[in-house]
Length: 127
Image 1 (tube, rainbow, N blue to C red):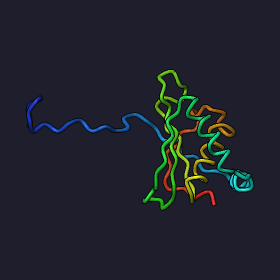
Image 2: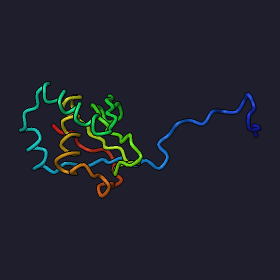
Image 3: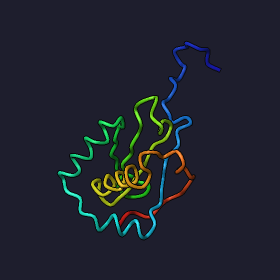
Image 4: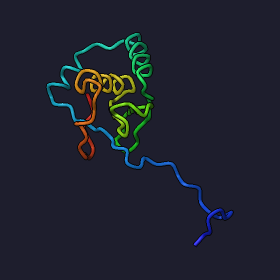
């Protein structure tokens, strides 16, 4: 056993702790609605400003496991109703994944994800 403060002690790795991921599966009707809604680069810029100015960190990543693009909304403020949750969205492109995240956050969940956590596995993409 390594003594506390020893040169050989491993630093504590950052982790998600009790954080829960909101992985919502869109219904077929919701997928059709989302796919049929045009989404421009200008709308993306406005929406990115909107969500970040509302107290969320937005992360973009390639998801090698699911072979898709992923977007994550993470609340930054302690008083945020969604603290301890991370909203996830996936798509064939970063733009489609972000569009889905905005749809989930504002339209479907009305900015409150607290009732939407369910453990899930891999989900089909938006398109």
